[in-house]
Length: 132
Image (cartoon, rainbow, N blue to C red; front, side, top):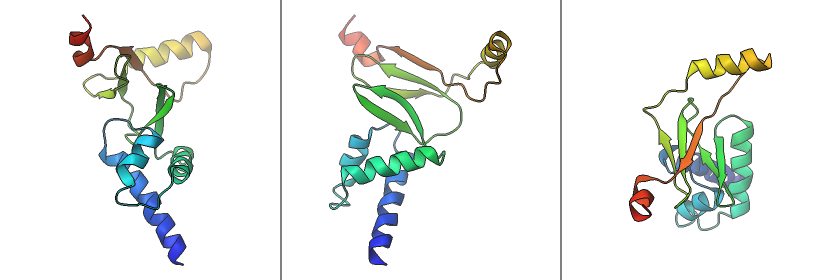
């Protein structure tokens, strides 16, 4: 019984970590954030639970950045920006997904669009000033 309790405690900690951070962490980043509080947590446990959360619709995979899949616990549709200079992933909450884009995709394809994810790439403000 104690092993199951530890398992759920770690699972809940992984999900809570994703929900309270806004930097769209990778599995390795989540592992680094949790291992001080949970010294017996393994990277495999983090990966396994992220896959579970993804299949349950609790988190989204934003993109693969610098070779690592990045995750987001904000499930409402929103726009992302990925910096090609520093690999930062950020939300653009002030931008709405244009409904006309969905309608145009459905019109031109004949398909029924169920989800749309819009991601911009480029240099963030900090990288832009460093590399004009």
